[in-house]
Length: 165
Figure 1 (cartoon, rainbow, N blue to C red):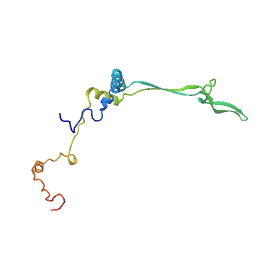
Figure 2: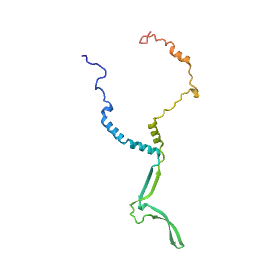
Figure 3: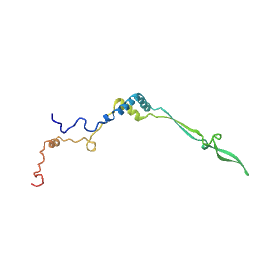
Figure 4: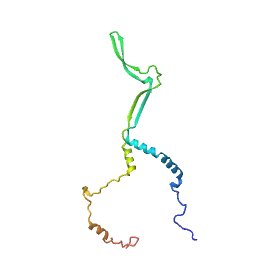
């Protein structure tokens, strides 16, 4: 039996990524497959919008004040003076209090909608138009194409390999 020379040998070369990472890939596929219905529901919910989101802002009680006026007696009589009054005077200054709560409703997400539609119906192919100069039709002359195909080849260089005749 003759020994094989050259060419591809069995087991030679770098192993394929699918072979070297087979177990982690299968584990990831199983994890995604188990969550697929939930992920699909999440995409559809994003596409539809309407999810409520709330933002809570807390500040230390000693920093929360309101503008107020106080009447002060002077030699000329009583005058009102603008002051800042603590909103929570009975609380520790470093205790956090809720000062603002914002609730918003998510708008429909266009990207999620497009993604869901492409998953269901397939990605649409983009139409491409080709045109000649100034948007006109591409000029095609059959004669020039025939001449290029059937014209005589250019004369061969009559030099020997070193540039001398």
